[in-house]
Length: 398
Image (cartoon, rainbow, N blue to C red; front, side, top):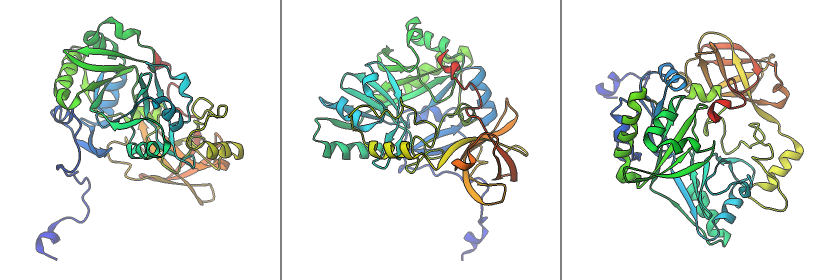
C-alpha cells in the first residue's frame, strides 16, 4: 500500500458526492447551486439538492413562510397518442375515468406481482396526453416495454418539462404576484395552463410538503430553467422566500411516503395502508397490471404493515442531516428481529422521535411495544397512529 493511500482515513464521517458529467443535472441545477447547496443525493440519475442550511432551519422556513425547491429531478414521462387513456388505465390501479382533463392524481404504478414500481403524481394535460411526475425509479423503460407489447397506439417519451415547488403558508401571495388572482381558483390536485414572461408552464396545486403549495412545470425547461428559477425567486423575495431541499421532517410528520425508503418493488399498496378503493380500484372487468395479484392479496390479507412508531431516547437526528444512514432494525419484546424502521426523524414541534416501521401484522396494533436499534442505541418504542400531524390533510387543501 502506498504512503498516500495509507495517509487517507479509512472512514470519512461525511464523504463527499462526486460532481462530474456522468450524473445528469436538472434545468435548475446551476441556479439552485448558487444558493449554497450543502448536500446532494442522486435521484432519477440526477443530482438532487437536499440541504442548504440545516434541516431544522429549513423545516421552520417551510411551515411558517414560503420556500422554493429544485425538483427538476422529477422527470416527466409523457403518455400520448390515440390510445393514451387506455394505456394509462392499464398502467395504474386507480380508475382514470375519475381523472378529468386539468386534474392530477397520486397513483401507484404496479408490477404483475402487485409490487409498487413508482408512486408519481399523474397530470392529465389533454384528453389523450398524460404526464407522470416521477419518484425515483426507471418507469420510462417499464412503460415503453408495456407499450411495445400492448398493441396500443401510444407514444412514451421523456419530455423537456421540469417542475419547481413553491411550498409553505405564504405560497399563495407569491403565486398571485406571478400569475394573478386566477391562480387561487385552482382546486387541490388540479392544474392550469399559464404563461410567464413568454414561458409556457403548467401550474398545479400539488406538492411534497403537507403544506399549502404549488408546482410550476416548465416547458422547454432546458432553455428556460435559469430564467424561470430567477423569476420565481425574485417574486418570492419580498415574501421572505427561502430555497430549501425537500423537507423530510415535514413529510414524515404528514404521512408522505418516500420511494426507496418506505416503499420498493417488494411493497404492495395494502402494506402501506393505501389499498383503499380509490387507490386500488378493483372495478368491473377493467384490467390493469397487477390486478390479479392485488385481488389475491386483498382477499388473503397482508402479513406485514407500515406503521407509525414513536422512539424513546435522545434525538435521532433529522433524516437529511445524514444521521440515518441505514434502516433501524426492529425487535419484539423477546429480542427477535421482526422488521425495520424505514424513515425516522426528530419532530421539532412535537419534540419526539417519530418514524415508520415495516413490521408483521401481529405487531402492528396501536400500543404494541417494540425495541429499535436506533443510531442512539437500543431504544424502547411503541406503535402509534400516523400521520403525526394534520391527519385529514386540511393544511394543504386550505
